[in-house]
Amino acid sequence: MTEINIQAMALTFNPIPANYRKMSDDELTERINQKKRELGEKLVILTHHYQRRKIVALGDYKGDSYALSKIAAGLDAEIIAFCGVHFMAEAAEILSSDDQTVYLPNPLAGCPMADMAAIANVMYAWDQLKELVPDSKIIPIAYMNTAADLKAFCGKHDGLVCTSSNAPGAFEWGFERGDKIFFYPDEHLGRNTANKLGIARDQIAVWDFRKRKLGGNSPDKIKNAKVIIWKGYCHVHTTFTPDHVRMMRERFPDVRIVVHPECPEQVVELADANGSTAFIVKYVDEAPSGSTIAIGTEINLVDRMAHEYPDKKVMELSGNTCAMCVNMYRTTLNDLAWCLENLDDIKSIEVRQEIQEDSRKALSRMLDIAK
Image 1: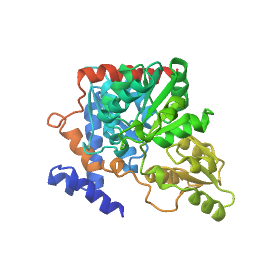
Image 2: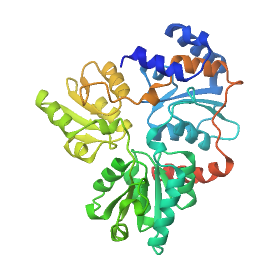
Image 3: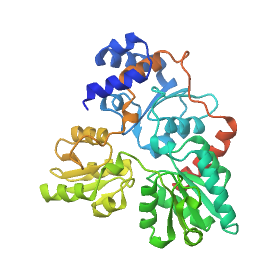
Image 4: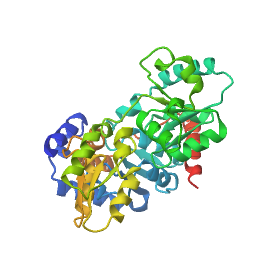
């Protein structure tokens, strides 16, 4: 699918006025920059690494969800425009002060993986666990890619939030305080983190939320498990397969392969390195000039790094452009211009007070373990 077609799709589903649809990129960029000049320090624009290049270029800060969470927690700006997806803007709203307002330029930018861990299903699973192992202390850990109500659930039950940057630290934090970890929603990040910490395979259970009884596990499997992992996934990172790694090495014998830990464990095992989005950016930056690097993550980040490091051959691991997060790609220059020029008329991100309080506990614990 071409960029033009995807942009048209994004515009079709975000009902901004027709005149904003007709503006050129240059005109939209100038209007965005004009609002930045007018608002000055009152406005900050946060951009996730997976955003399109033209959006990232306009941001005051760019980073992965962990880095942007830390930034959001320390901002003084009255207006935060978060160019990412809904759970990220929610986290910024939770961590911001009462006199700050958070906007998501395209309100339809969601996360299918986050939707896989609906709070009703999580609570149903939690009740089954507490009935089966009443004497075990279970620490719930929610990946950043979750809705605020699940983050609040973790905060309320002595758990925390993590990102791919600090998942191992979050697991270690959990084991210091409990007997078992229940991790949501990404099966692959959960398994790769458990592998990194040396958790035995027979002590890892996968909870399939589509199965009514114990997520498809036997009682003994759950009782023996140290880590219980929710069966969710990122459609971008499960694009990559071991065959992609092998074929890339056949084509480029000197290639370095770096992947995100949301990829399946077989891909992670075959790669030269794995880590968060920030880790991947640093990996490319520190690679010697002339390096050939294949990356297993979202295509917009790979594309931007290919432009930023012309002295290195930077490629997407699978050799095509299917590894795209369409929800990240929804945010266009049209959306950002419309948002900034109509702040008084559009809906900001709101999180209920009781959800905010417990979510903030879980997010604050996440930030604390990195100190």
